Image 1 (cartoon, rainbow, N blue to C red):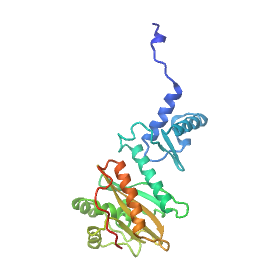
Image 2 (cartoon, one colour):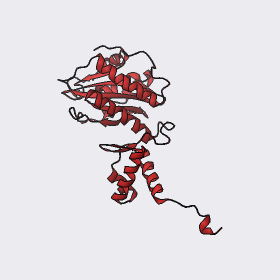
Image 3 (cartoon, rainbow, N blue to C red):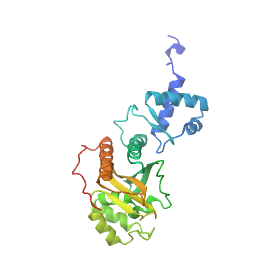
Image 4 (spheres, rainbow, N blue to C red):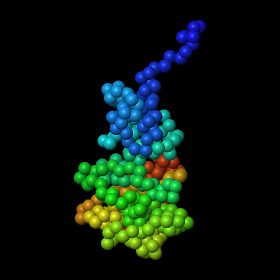
Length: 262
């Protein structure tokens, strides 16, 4: 056998396609096709053709703001906490919420002692609240942050609050530590902020809990249009429980349905 015959035959188009999937799988944000082209050095035409094929086969999924992993990605079930897989799961859940209730949907996560905004999916009729203060400095004033704080063990909650000032972002913000702790300790299993982060906006959040994951799923609505009732909260809880299961929770019904009180 000659040296040439002994060398494996490599298919360049397959290598390029796998490279695109690898980049998307390791990205914490959706990636536009143009950005993939720039990262890889492939021509736009080649990149678009490869992406079109990968989307058709289910290895990538096209979102308005870029590409995420598709449901046929081989390690979608095994590597839940890899960045690309986690993002793809979250994006699917947020899109379900946005389409169901017509409100912009958010997901935040507690990691390494801090709050992180993972993803947002905008609703056409109710666009996102302007994020003028980052979540790391406004957890006490947002439904996203308050839900996570309520779910943390007492020691972690107190540690977090000892390291963050309770800035008064609006006249409705709870800036007194004792008052906030009392509210968190009596959480009904979901959280709300009524113009505490931004005047004119009401947000509602529910927990997303799985092994190694403490997160919250939320929606925002104009305050004058916000009707926060049992149906709305139940819809959010249903999606959040499904996402928890996809992220590794033992069962869909991990506990009793949260109490509904306002």
